[in-house]
Amino acid sequence: MKTLTVALPGREYNILIGQGLLDQAGERCRAVLPRAERLFIVTDSNVAPLYLERVEKSLAAAGFRTASCTIPAGESSKSPGQLAELWEEMMAFGLTRTDAVVALGGGVVGDLAGFAAATVLRGVAFIQIPTTLLAQVDSSVGGKVAVDLRAGKNLAGAFWQPKLVLMDPEVLNTLPDATFADGMAEVIKYGCIWDRDFFDLLRANPSRRAVMAEIGHVLYTCCDIKRQVVEEDERDTGARMILNFGHTLGHAYELAGHYETWTHGQSVAAGMCRAAELGAAMGITPGCVSGEITALVRAFGLPDAIPCTAEEYAAAVGLDKKGSGGDISVILLKEMGKAVPHKMAKAALLEELK
Image 1: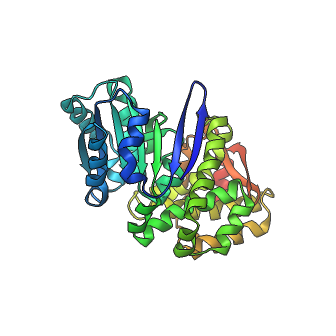
Image 2: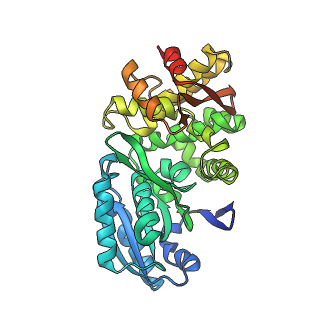
């Protein structure tokens, strides 16, 4: 088993990575929640049949009383209405401020359950048990929790750090290929923004089978990069912005597909390719970088381009949380393995994208 510690001012938590952690959930949760009696589990309709009973059994063996809510799988569940339902179910269960919420699932479950934990009773403890590659390498670490609004994605949320993150690579074996590829977009992102050698490792292992043979190293590397960035900038006001490479344009692609046609990973993959082209056109990114990213995302079955209108770009840029007034910090690559925020007028960015 591998352990990473995220050390933030006045508090810290561990990320545990290893086979068998799913069945150790009870003892691991008990170690960080010595006073808790009740744990409320949030999962979804894909994950519940596979893993909910195992986790409940482990938690019960550690002396916890549990209740669970299984939400419909998919982005549409990350809504204010579903959040309100969770609050009511948590109160009906008798959750108290010494108890905790457990997120068992992918990014939608983690974001929704985390926001519920951050707000119910003005905040209770929160455990992440991510079951998708995307959640394991990205959304379960760092404390960003949110729901979507009609105006756009993740527009109501909070920073609420988990007490513990448990990553069992075994759960990745049940992912459909498309869902695994979705997570690979975020894995590739870490190589692009931080670690050229890691990017080259992925280029040398351009398949699901090859990545799974190195999965312990892949998970640890991605989480360690995110740990370093989050420790420097927990609230996403400076250095943490680089984690959004490919996301400004990716959100436009998600919007273009009404959050149904294109997944988050597919949109980020295309967004990274477009951002590399944009950086090259602006004289910031070396010309060869775009081709390297494009070849790698294609190798994992991800799109390198998604149709998007000027109006859809404008809508996404207008809602982007890296924006301030008429400006936006778009994340570009100075070289492979080094990302920089480039502040520019939103109007100028939209003109470049035409």
